[in-house]
Amino acid sequence: MHQLTYHGVLAPAASRRSEIVPGSQPPTAPESAGPSASPPTPPRPCNRYSWPELMARVFDVEVLRCGKCRSRLKWIAAITEADVIARILAHLKLECAVRVPRPARPPPQAELAY
Image 1 (cartoon, rainbow, N blue to C red):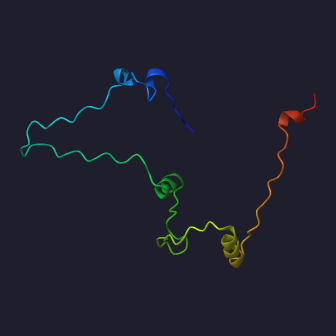
Image 2 (image 1 turned 90 degrees about the horizontal axis):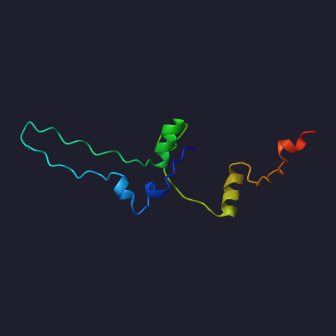
Image 3 (image 1 turned 135 degrees about the horizontal axis):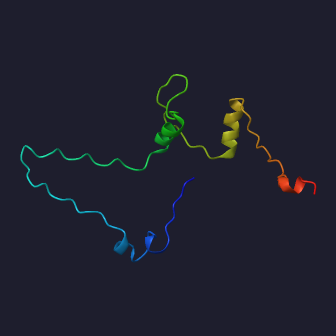
């Protein structure tokens, strides 16, 4: 994961940041609004993507489409009760037991013979 962190006067909440980092320019009015004026620029797209859009961009998977018939999926319910989930999984003949994680192994360096 790439992450860039600024400190000091470049930090986002620094009180003197505005003296160093240029702010946004106020929009300028067109000089002539006649027929030769250029068309307005389209608005910038939003930088935030929804979860389905991200999945489609990164993994090329449409998560809101059925894998069999390719129709759009519809949200039915959010089930949080463990007993209801266990009954549904048992009906579908899927495993519903919680797997116990294996114990951690020692670091590889501890296994080396000196």
